Length: 577
Image (cartoon, rainbow, N blue to C red):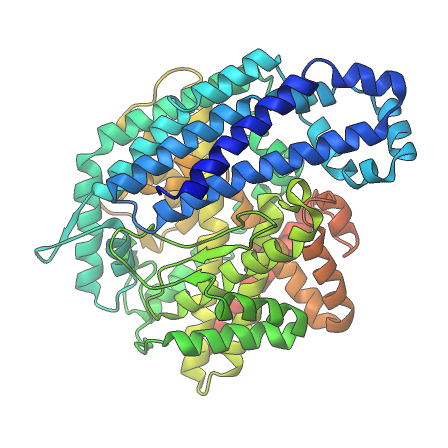
């Protein structure tokens, strides 16, 4: 944290941003248009890209260091201070995209024709242009960026600090949230119940604070959306994902209409397997009675995932091998380590890093495969350069889930008994329900919260009421949502850090299911197209990419097709008894 190289890079980033702004702000558009100078514009975009990559590289270091021990006050301070400095420096560059959008399409086309190097950046300039209807003046945009430090970023930081400091008492042992949540998958029903009750007690004891954070952030977003002329509460997320509202509406419609065929049906089947009239909410993710208690060592998990990618494509398995061979994965559970898992893209000139908390369960193997799907995607798309390497959340989740599906195939092939196959199938169905059904209910929860917030603050009771209604609709009559479950909305970090992010999981899972079907129908033809899909990064719009596979994401029928794999698995499980 005190490395001289870091401070030099921070100083250099600020100097480069100041020099760029001094040279180009308020002058570059007129000079380029008058002289039809595409080469100069290409050079400016290239410099802008280099500065942005330097910013991101510094911030990535701070984020990764903080994620390894979120309880360390010095790391937290370093992360917060670095974020503040980067925001201040980046605000100096805000003018560039705003002024770039003042060049009309016809003029831009002529500049592309005159300068092949500028044409390289055409996809990025196209994406920048989609924000034009929502842009304010440079001064106002800089104000929003700088004020975010003490508004949305500040409240998000409070949430993180609060969640990481909470302790949940289970059998006289004080646990942090990650191991407490992990107990909801425990074979022992009494442990699951106690973990659920511990979560309820502690979360309910802090609901006033979480309600305040939620209301404040929802109002902060409403102000931002109103000033930026966003019509719908989720439109800003759709814009950042480069996806049309009607596409997401079609996805939501398909998922909501599938509740009775998927989640209601499966949870009723699981209750029968467990010998119960219904599942308690702490039973929803419980192992089946024929539980597989074996822990999978890391070496075996590595072999399973590597084999899955190798069977699909040697070139992808080579990439996976770099993550294992070069220690790009931090897997052990450690005190203070950020919960869950992620693959951080860092910047193209470095490489992605994966963080997870591996505990040896089958779902941990699936998490490893999922994050490697992200990592491989990030690595392959890096060849497009910083500005065009980043992929919208929807498509990045598709790559991650497809990696899970490949690994699922290997796990199923290695199953030696009908019982083992049943356990693997059931685990996959539950994963799909958590990733598709549950995430769409999260999205619907956010929609109601943000819509109602426009009319005034939501009470603690109203937030709990919305949560219980939507969860009950999705789980169906076979799951009893008992006392205490109403507080479980409070720990979901996506609601705080990235509103409406969650539909990307359902988008990615349904699309990955459709990819999976195509792969089994014609593996050779699909393989090459899929690798090109990964390499494309942010250079092509999702409709263009998916059209090459024959997909229309604006169709409810398309999304329903992606849900059929889950339905077929449930049918297969019902036949097993």
